[in-house]
Image 1 (cartoon, helix red, strand yellow):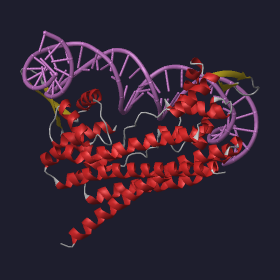
Image 2 (tube, rainbow over the protein chains, first blue to last red):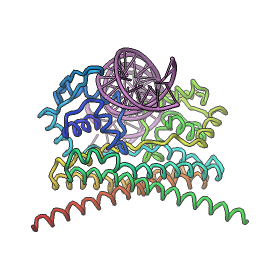
Image 3 (spheres, protein in one colour):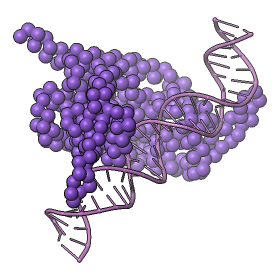
Length: 187
Length: 187
DNA sequence: ATCTTATATATGACGAGTCATATAATAACA
DNA sequence: TGTTATTATATGACTCGTCATATATAAGAT
């Protein structure tokens, strides 16, 4: 599971609570790995059972106690092992291509509207990517490692380039559909 | 659920059994929507309960009886409705970017090896895409609709272009890492 | 003679992730 | 005064998808 190892990755930077981890995910890897709060907590429980992390309960007044998780040597080893092991090839799974596949049922106007809607989403995503560096800035300063920051930037670049490629595809297809329509109108 | 509507989409072309559907998926949309056999059967059961398809049991000697599913008017309407409705924006989920994000832990040589491995996978995928038109040819002939075939081709083009974009990203990053290493060796 | 492949449907167990909600106190806002 | 946000952890119910396996017969390959 990738979430497990992402958590180990964060705990390798510093001990954190589940709450801290949720914030860390949201401000750094969210653009390619959104993490659910309840799943983080459940995964922490499992990591503890496996001996990859240990829990330190930090009592607090006025607030629920914090459970701060520390990476163990076994956990650090597991992280390293996982990082060096290529993941099994992922199969593509693009739900909206099913729409494209069967969309011949609709009129060209409807299809263009659908593609435009999708293009608008991708443009919004590109704008979100613009804000990622700011959001992650706090972490970059805390870690103080240009090497880490270098690789973080790579993931953002990947997202931007994939989104751009998808957008270019959409824009091209919209153009083709429009041209097909305008030429048939003239007949 | 997308699988539901993909099944409706296929049944709109012609009545089919679960077994037929599995073959249809494998030879046409597999490159962006791999479908599990057991899930197809379970989904057919659900579609029947919802009244979107009806079952016709075709007795066979020597073989298990076929259960041929027919799209109902309600199912056809649902398919059309779904096709014209934009799907909620999908969040990106790219497991191996988690590796990239935390990969600073490893040596550059290890990182390059990891990226190369991934690039090899993408090249293999591109070769698979080359074979898709042949595999889908039987369906294209059966449907006899240039309009449908046009949209089928779009989905393949999407896969090819996304894969190429990912591959270009990888090749660029590998090059950068190699250059960083060769220049530091010379110091 | 045995193994694999094709035809055909089906279930159980599991994994990963989502959504809603519970608990509990404080602080800020309207 | 009531609502919302922040800090903090946790569980139940659910969805979608995967993997293994069961049943049953025949044809073809080794």
